[in-house]
Image (cartoon, each protein chain N blue to C red):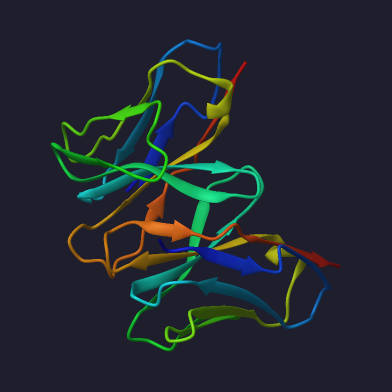
Length: 114
Length: 112
């Protein structure tokens, strides 16, 4: 099992550009989520999905879009990048419907917006 | 709204010491609490998961306790080693959804 994979590892964008951060898992987990990590603030939830075709907003969804067409993939789209979106982005997954399970995290994508 | 805090924000200890990291949460209606380790520039590694019905979990030199009624968890690290140097994060999964709320972390340095 590769677990949770994320690409790219690093990305630099100019203000106003758009891009997609990729996330995939091979554990057949129904639940997937995206977090951003900023210094001193811990991880904050951006969007999450409880299964293919079902997504919902987290704590900080503005400026981001997600879709879930398959169980394996959960891409995060930045529509028009802003310097405030400079952060480290983590994707996570876990079995769904049973809240007692732990979450598994990907290695992260470090994004800089200039 | 669930809020999670961790004290101290940073800690520096000599090798061999036993130490305690603290995590507090405001809403006791939780499903579970998970402790993670994060090395600089890396992702999160799960250390221990405590279900709401449990009081503690142990893995090697690590022991995590949970007191739901007081909204507290502690991570005890025995005989600390320089390799334990990392940031330790706690996260709670509450009864209102499937999502975790994270604390800001404690940055631990173990000096040889």
